Length: 204
Image (cartoon, rainbow, N blue to C red; front, side, top):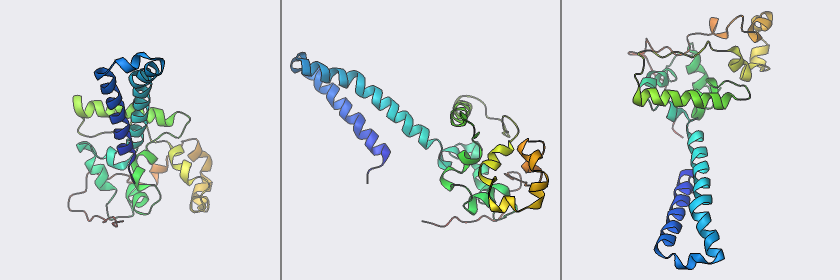
């Protein structure tokens, strides 16, 4: 079955073929129907191709593969495979608590009305720094990690609600007075990976 990328490539080729045909033989396009076809080839179809291409690439940018394609992110990718369930990111990734195909996006997207858009704008800055700027030796979040991103999935879950410790400080968790990461850490242990045993992801 053709992929979205292959379908998009075919669409672009059709546009190029139409424009080439118009450029070579302008005569038949002087008629009313020909003008409509020329308008579609030069304006409507390129706009559709641009929008479709943007949608394809935005969707791809949610993938774990895309996030870890930058050299500076390699250690964070390794932290997902540490064979130690005491590491928060590793435990979530390896036990399927998050979608492995969109692991980074799942936890590092602000779950508000415009969360996806804000994440994409920040991502553009990351790409700029990676290719045109100077990447810092150690990266850090723009702001403290919000409990909202944890409660987006865990809030209401039996494993979370059944813990009396969670119930005792529920108000502090929802208001971010107490961070989930105060108890659940380390998250990405990138400083102690040398010689660490890694979990091997099963092959599909």
